[in-house]
Image (cartoon, rainbow, N blue to C red):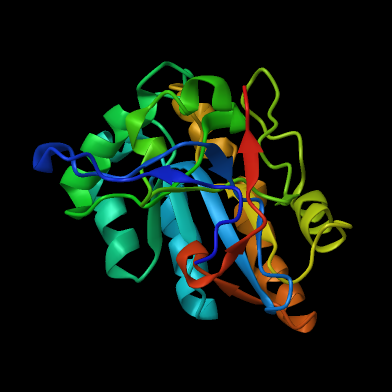
Length: 242
């Protein structure tokens, strides 16, 4: 995979430290525009039973997606994470507690890796806030790819009582009518919430669940096939300079 602008340091002479580390902090918002694939990504889970509802829709549609999970929820609901993997989806690192603390992604990596038995090579900063995120060591590894998005369903908003602000119809329009939607797009949706309030976690994904079949159908009508992020060729990295 070509990574213009993303450089890394060579392995140290000490064999115990022979891990390549990036010199620059880069993230990707899309894949190659010449390939008619898009990536459906879901943040802030796992969140039973909402994540399971999304998994069922993806299974019925024959779609593989990417789930950027939070460490605290993966720790609480490990069976849902295992189901993601068993059904062929990609699990990525979305931090541990959603509090933008230094080392948050490192803490999440330990939890997620213990459940899946493998490291997360794809990561996403919580709230796309990179100031604390790039202080985590796992984000700077040459084998790590930080993934943003160029299309959003804007399904993250909710009222004080937990009810979603965005309707299913709006989620569909936000995705399918986005001026940025096209080959290589990375679409961000939510299957959970960082909130510890159960009502918010259970209510927030409802519009997304209702919208998802229409989003998948609409993408395919446009000749865009949903794939996992690691099945795309990520392109045109952006450098975060702080």
